[in-house]
Image (cartoon, rainbow, N blue to C red):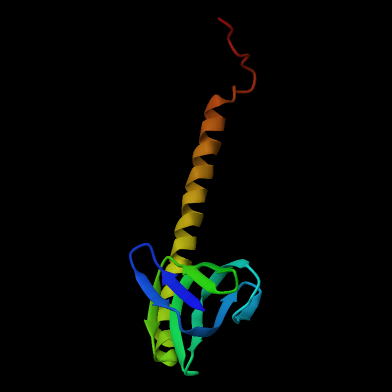
Length: 139
């Protein structure tokens, strides 16, 4: 099978030698073999594992992303960030920890932005609402 893993800035992996791919989404881990049905899923922050024709395992840490299977012969992953490596323990200990911290920081920033947005809307509504006892003036 062909396996492509890309980020917005680079191609992390491109091989024709994949015989098995293991990845993880919100429902858990899953495997892909040649002939797999077309498939599209959102990946979790995880380590994608793939096995080559010599039965050797290889690893790529992904910071989420989209995985698609096309015609049972091609697996494509588009991730915001990905790091290939042969040391599974280092990828899990260092890279996944960093990726998860980045995701948590992005969520916290998004939540703070949402709170500011809601506070601004509430303030605008207070200013637009007429004060009690004062009828709105008509032209």
